[in-house]
Length: 411
Image (cartoon, rainbow, N blue to C red):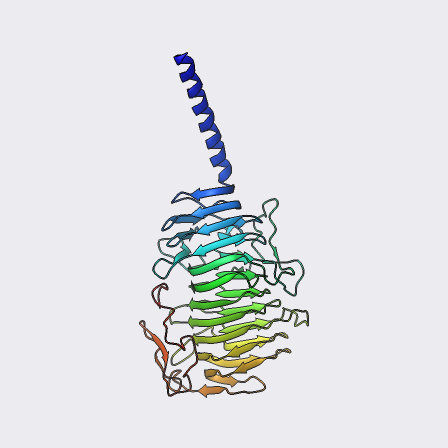
């Protein structure tokens, strides 16, 4: 009997081990639930709850999709490294689809970091983070180009938008995204953080994007609000809004420094869509308490406008500071909106929003001569405005609470 029991136990263990091995093999592609061990590769499809441990290190090897009913929970201090791929279509990226959730909550002392896996990182090493929701946009059946490459897994839908303005895709708080923006197809790069049809019950707060090849933050439709955003040395636009985005972006700090490549780079760029249509909802971002800093004594090659509004977009920009761009504000192709209480410095063309309301436009060879932030161009900068100049009460730090310290990197 004892021998029989031992044999039965051994058979049970062998069966369990075989099942476990099969489950692990399946889990490489589709994980339904569980805590991923430190050092794991994030699976290609997440259809249940997957958790990344505090201070753990994880890898994105190609595209990972969080599908409807799935949730990825990323605990404080976790690092997610995007692996560079040999072909653009395979670029590593985390994509939260409609009905999926992300819960990524770091802290001031332990932010969550998405970065490159390369020992010597470079701009565009990996794709980026994409979140798709069901909030209104002005395009039907829209999708983010390139995130379905090289082929879309069966059952995965990467369209965005819908009718639920209060949709929630989860939360990103105290998160850094670095070295993203890989090419996903010819002349098409992912943004560091891409939001498509994301709803107002999603939380985006304290997010830094650094060294991205394309835009820092791009909003395709949706109603989500975002605050305490930082961009460092982004190649293209800092804030880009399209396809009916109507959210509010508050407390933004954007810095460009010498030694980096910039291309068609604006502080703000906004379009209703590529065709200047009157499709609704009309793109109309609200941007307040932002500071955009570029060159000190001359504009960097490849930088264009402090703010470019075009193609029938609306806009509402208040209490913000723009400095160090060649050109100021442009309003073309049916764009119209509110631009008030701002300070704009340029090296070349002032530009203006019509009607001009309570604005200060400055043409000077020193970007800070009139605005007089304490020390915005040093490697240990101080962005405080003087209380007696045109920058007083404006920009990213009006309350002097230094929200951008400690959790960020490279400022």
